[in-house]
Length: 93
Image 1 (spheres, helix red, strand yellow):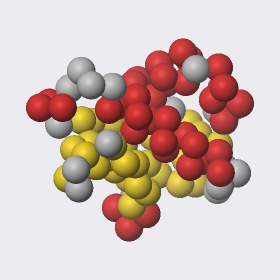
Image 2 (cartoon, one colour):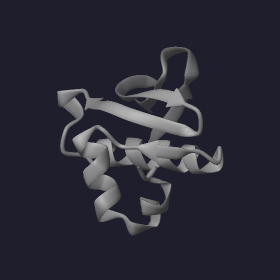
Image 3 (tube, helix red, strand yellow):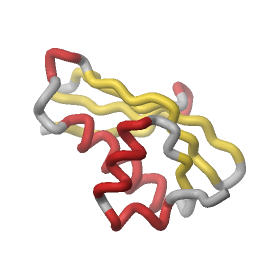
Image 4 (cartoon, one colour):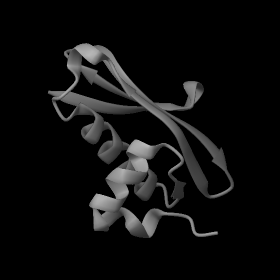
């Protein structure tokens, strides 16, 4: 089972499988907005939907904190476009 954790010291969300970090999504915070420039999953774990789980977990956490997201990573942007329930998190302007 995969687990998504926020690592504020590293400015990234991380996804773990069996206790090992296998992916991350970097972020920068400015005011009430979280910019997400990069997402990566260890290629050995590719094709298992772990990138989607990572983005979903990160977006759920961002929502819980009352912040907005600026998805500069194409993978995060595509995920939000495909999941209407997260489109209200996108910072306009």
